Amino acid sequence: MYLLLFIVFVLGYVMIAFEHPLKIDKAASAILTGVIIWTVLLLGKDTLLVGHAGFTGQGEELIKQIDLHLLEHVGEIAQILFFLMAAMTIVELIDAYRGFEVVTKRITTTHKVTLLWLISFITFFFSAALDNLTTAIVMSALLKKLINKQEDLWFFGGMVIIAANAGGAWSPIGDVTTIMLWIGGQITAFHIIEVLFIPSLLCLVVPLIALTFILKGGIERPEVIEEDNNHGGSVTSFEQKLIFWLGVIGLLSVPIFKNVTHLPPFMGILFSLGVLWVTTEIIHRKDEEPVKSLSVAGVIQRIDTPSILFFLGILLAVAGLQTSGHLRDVAEALDSSIGDIYIINVLIGILSAVVDNVPLVAGAMGMYTLETYPPDHIFWELLAYCAGTGGSMLIIGSAAGVATMGILKIEFFWYLKKIGWVAALGYFAGFLYLYLLY
Image 1 (cartoon, rainbow, N blue to C red):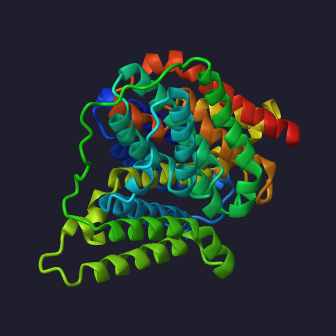
Image 2: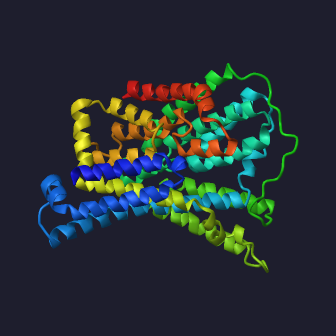
Image 3: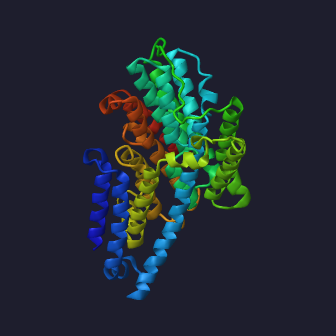
């Protein structure tokens, strides 16, 4: 049974990794993996839990213990999912009101190097305030309006991936993995900003400096720039700016809300969503036929629900392995064979370029307790940085990379040849800073 659990997880992971060749959504594979692991755990409870994981009791008493562990994990997972759903809804609402144009319309330069630095820094800070996936999607759509030549478009798209992942790493709400660590109590909001801002900045600036010597001249703009208003409905300039700033302020205020009230982060993001919801209802209460796409009820239908279910499935699977004692065994093996937290984390970062960083971070959170590494320990800061930025080395190594690849049609091997090496330079530059500092 012990080996069977491991096999189920590996098979589920393979199905997730080969989502496109198999033509099976990774959310479906993750959900099945999570449920099967807990089913095997229950069926083999006497061997797995009493014999291996150190549980006590038998029969009905043991089943009750499993139920309690499952419900405890579901409570922790639910906090992450509620946070993500609310954040996605806020971002979609800003997009529905064309709020991002408040920033993007001010970009007028055609000089390659100047535009590259400008786009990269906008992406870097947007990603910290919103999240890296959403920011990559918004900036990729913007690049299609600004750049005509494919080679230039791909170079800029590559830097958007690097900047989005670097920006998400130093913010408690910038990446799914940092959200997980924040909600789990491994990091605190202001400490991660303080510790990871400079290494994340290095992760961006080093590739920018390298490409500054490669890119020359100006960009060629598309002949026709069409207004992007896919959601229907018209908004005034006032409404556009109001929703943009309310959304951004709402997202940025979540750490402050947690610090003041001591409530979990998902309560802060739900409060921000509630404020925006009431605001949009007031704006359109006099409309004879309210536009559904401009309401929260309409916008919430467009959020990436399969991704939410993917996180649910993979986190359930990892929780099952944690309960069975598998993750504890892996932690002991790593400590005995490697032992160095810097090497362990740099390997996690490199591995995150090949496989999804969510289960890697979830696994690390299950392997090492807060008794082993207390909140804000350098281990957790390293984990946030390495797992967040290591995925930039391959275009399929992060959600931001996959999204940009789909929008701009960037080829895998072109990215590996032209962008992968500068992403690696940035990754190791930030890591070296942390290594020397701590």
